[in-house]
Image 1 (spheres, each protein chain N blue to C red):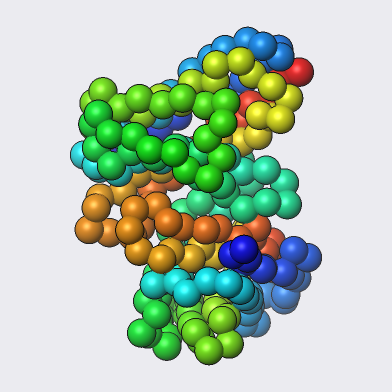
Image 2: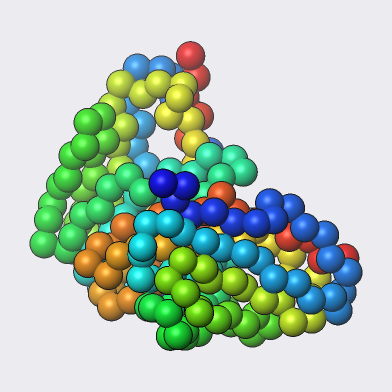
Length: 112
Length: 112
């Protein structure tokens, strides 16, 4: 199993540009989520999904959209990038009966 | 508001000694507490979970204690090795999906 994969690993955007961060998992996990990690702050939940077709907002959802058309994929879309969205983004997944999350390697995003 | 405190300063210890990391929390009644390891440029990796009705949990050289009265968890690594050098995150969950709050982490450096 590849586990949780994320692409790209690094990305630089200009303010106002849009892009999609990709996340996929091959463990058949129903639950998937997106976090951002900033210096001096803990991981903060952006959006999450409990299954295909079901998504909900986390702690810091503004400026981000998600969709979940398949169990495997959970892309995160930035509609109009802002410098405040410069961060490292992590995707995670787990099965409903377990509290253990499996994290991807992260995407480092810089917005100029 | 909920707050999780981990020592923001790095912890340096000599190889072979026991490393002890602290996680304190306020305004929270967690159902469980987790510890993750994070290496530079990588996603967090789950280590241990301890539930509110458990006092102590062990896994190989790792030991976690959970004191809901003091609102504190201690994470111990015995016979520490340079390979244990990493940032360690604690996370508290209150049950239900993704009601997990992460601390900022403590960087551990094991000196040969």
